[in-house]
Image (cartoon, rainbow, N blue to C red; front, side):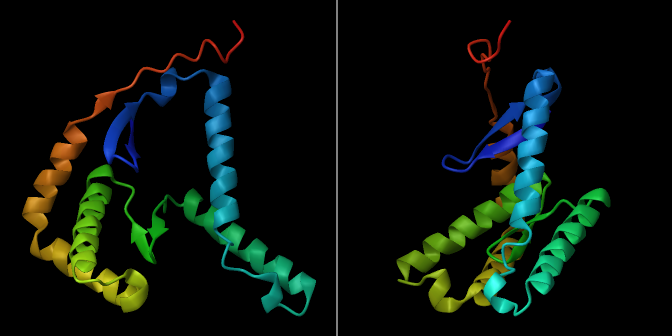
Length: 159
């Protein structure tokens, strides 16, 4: 069972990957891996290199590094410059802490851009640590409130 958080609603749904048809599974893996390996080198800009071979090598190094991390089980992601946990509970805890800090900042007319990512991340970490029990309880409640979504693939697949 894979838990997927729907960003717009923060609802978490369960997806039984093994029940998806093989063609769908292959598509999802290919799509995801292609996305991961193309996102990992987005910070490498061709304009920063005088030599095209150096640019290609820099991109290749990033891709190989990411693939190595995936092969070793390091599957964390980054959001606003901070590693995002892949554990659903820890990810939800971080999401809640971030949302609460953003709400508090908005009330004071502050933005992440105005205070910088480092200060923002410090605020989030401090808030999360200081309110961990409450936030964990809320995060677990959100995860437990999972909606089962049934998807009928028959209209897209040939029988």
